[in-house]
Image: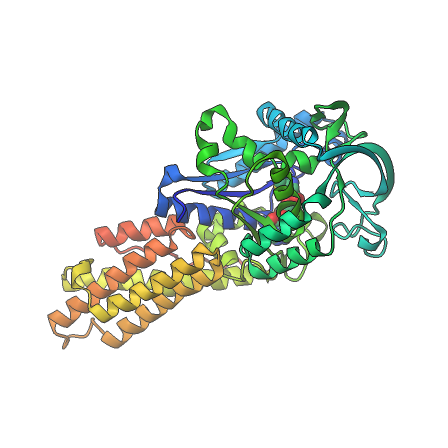
Length: 484
Ligand code: ME8
């Protein structure tokens, strides 16, 4: 077992502000970080997020607003940080690729591959999508448009640039996937990536002659480093910053990159090849998640559904927003989401966890019995609880967050059934039976609080305190519908 855990989100393009779709990614990473802080300790866990601030797209967005690129990224990186703070994100650091220490690292990395002959001069002619900052072939296009940007037509571009010998790493990558079948998680995405690499890899241009807003190529300062070749190294550059002394040894290569399916190729193919070429080990896992739509519509300004996660959190609480998304579909799958589902999820938590807590505390006080004594739990009850907790652990450690939440749901369902059967409130129950039932339930509840903590940190902290102090609280108070 690893002693340390490192989790990253993609570094987001600071064009606009984060929305609920972007937030889904960071909620996954945050949940994992919180789980491992509980398990391995705060000092052995590192959670990184940040912004990807170079490239033609950023320069264009800045120009459109009459700002310099630096002014623009300063403003939008601050907005990202505000939103993440607003939703109680527990990241340990926010990396910005315009940090000179990162820029220097990105230069050193590309220089290493140049020195060992993996980067050569060439010229490129092809179709380029400025929104993706990526080249495409005719076959990649959908109705003549970019496969990721249905309104953008990739433009024919010709320029001198330097290529990275990605094709050289085909066998290395196939061996990596064979030796570590869970390098990419979940399995269906591992199979997808393997298929792509088996079909063959082409060398890719990794510098740009025409993009000025970028990191200068150290061996040809007329050129800048391709934005992805500058962005991916953020995961490693941060660990070399002076304030993180010893982190590179501690957190590399135990990295877990959480990425959306749109950027899987960069993380599962290009990044390991870049690292191998520069003499680094590859990360531990790439966790791929799907995309969700809202009421069947793609999230975006044009659909007017790019909801700020803080707006939902203001009404339902940070915890329920993340719970609602993480409990709605499996990590690798696509899904749909809407406010009605969020309300259903809120009720679900109120009726299961909230209700259980209220009943146990109320009855324990009413009947004046001792609770939370692990030594006095019925053995079969304890075994069942431990089995379910072990199932949760198995799921979360392979990042099956949906399944882990379902397991906690099974525990609360069982407990609510148990309390209904035991009826500890009835007058004819013996004090011993009442004490046993409430003791069983309070120990179970403490476990539920612990298991929910990575997912619903604020509520779990409240529930834990209430149980310890035997204070009757309403964990999920009724929310008035403004329509009524
Ligand atoms: O790609 N559902 O940045 P980006 C789920 N800078 N996830 C969604 C989503 C949705 N509807 N919409 C967005 C970049 N996402 C690069 C990354 S990393 C070295 C560089 C998430 O701002 C999803 O995780 O375009 C996707 O991968 C990410 O936002 C894209 O962020």
